[in-house]
Image 1 (tube, rainbow, N blue to C red):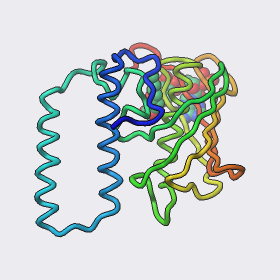
Image 2 (image 1 turned 45 degrees about the vertical axis):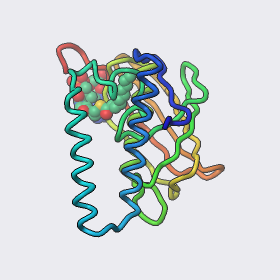
Image 3 (image 1 turned 180 degrees about the horizontal axis):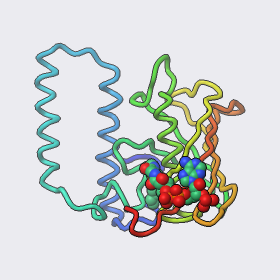
Image 4 (image 1 turned 135 degrees about the horizontal axis):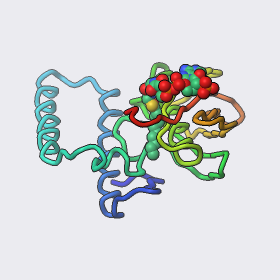
Length: 200
Ligand SMILES: CCCCCCCCCC(=O)SCCNC(=O)CCNC(=O)[C@H](O)C(C)(C)COP(=O)(O)OP(=O)(O)OC[C@H]1O[C@@H](n2cnc3c(N)ncnc32)[C@H](O)[C@@H]1OP(=O)(O)O
């Protein structure tokens, strides 16, 4: 199974590695979403818990150090991470970005709407990656303010925009927005500060 729109831009993985890894992450996301929908009997849950534990035990055979892990540092943010929200970038300039995103059932707070924390996590990842690519690499979130303007539906393609508003020395000021058609769901304003050695 492969994720539509999966990208590996600036990544160091081969196409075969990227496809296989994104396939595994997509299957994991499907598991997370399915867990949010079911009410199985206890004996079935015990049986399936064993199966999930077996997968984790098998994967632990392939643990590697930071910098070598497929889920980090290899240009697959969003699509290639089990917990981050996958999004697609469709237009990218030096100061602006346009993309799309769809929150899944595993990101739901209640009543078919996305959890506020998932929205904030998306903005942190999108804006941080954008700053890293177009502003200043090695920057960290100093502040991130999110305004929840309207409910954010799950399982619906939403428009994602971001822009670098200004750069002052080590500081990059960015804004982002999430919209469902003409309805603004959420807006974000953030400051990323480039860290100085020996800051970790
Ligand atoms: C391809 C890879 C892409 C990766 C994308 C990942 C995106 C995810 C990014 C994250 O989530 S990072 C994790 C969450 N953030 C943190 O854990 C940051 C924790 N805080 C820190 O490490 C430091 O506070 C920080 C590096 C942000 C700043 O500390 P410094 O000691 O380097 O800077 P300093 O305190 O001297 O401030 C530098 C400037 O920033 C300003 N500043 C710092 N924090 C601020 C703040 N919170 N609000 C407003 N201004 C702030 C500060 O006033 C000053 O302005 P001026 O230069 O004009 O004097």
